Image (cartoon, rainbow, N blue to C red; front, side):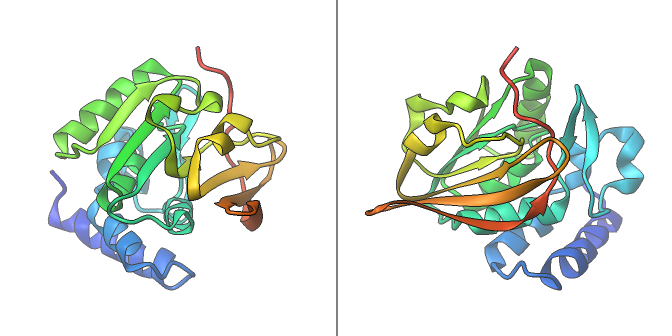
Length: 212
């Protein structure tokens, strides 16, 4: 379990790296203040747990920086009844944050070993509304669609059509789009007239690739 010292670091991270920037949703701030990021970071990186940057977690994947996790979660516009799909579950950290705010979360991870570790961590923390699955995130998860929000933690040149199809009316898809070196974090929203698109900020994610 997290120690008081790590809780203090977490509060400082939320205050300086999130609240003093443009993260204003109190539910998002509370979730980031509650989820112990150290439980999702490799032991040899624990000293960097609350630095505002991504960290490697093995298999060519990373745990996203706290600010990006908060920004994507805020942009998703979640409620306690939201059904959420996460693509690129990685360590399980973002899924844990989403589980603090949303009703049900399905997290897709293409690497079975990472998915198994994420399940173990979430279970140990008592997170029971997140379902970690192994699969190709480009196809989404039609068995649980439609989703009120879909968050993609890997970059692609074009938005996978399956993800847009699986959005519920009023739903939002938050996804990094662009070449491998730098992307735009984009929010798609399904409206009665179709879909709208807006850009949040530049970003840099690992690429979205097919499942193993």
